[in-house]
Length: 144
Image (cartoon, rainbow, N blue to C red; front, side):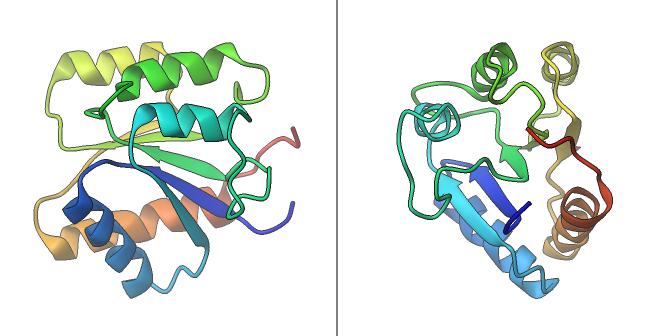
């Protein structure tokens, strides 16, 4: 496996900046590619749109928000699990939603992990550190 990359699917500019700062703060130097809505994420992941920063490969993990324009996060997850190319791709819901139905629906659609965004920056940095370490370094993935 080549360079390990993260696809962050997030439409909120402040949350994008916060997430990028948190990864930088914990010194995880992996590339982070940003998709700003669900349709862009699907186009990238299902091979409909080439992104130079992914060089035609799948990311190591997708950090997916639920509330997205054009195509919502749960619909993105559902479509990813339907396709052979992305069926086994690790997807982590990273959201501020406290709704139990979102949690249950995410797992029923095959999410690998569901993480609520902590409000305090220090707690968010720690959550990002743990996510990065686990998904980029500890988790074993099948070659697809």
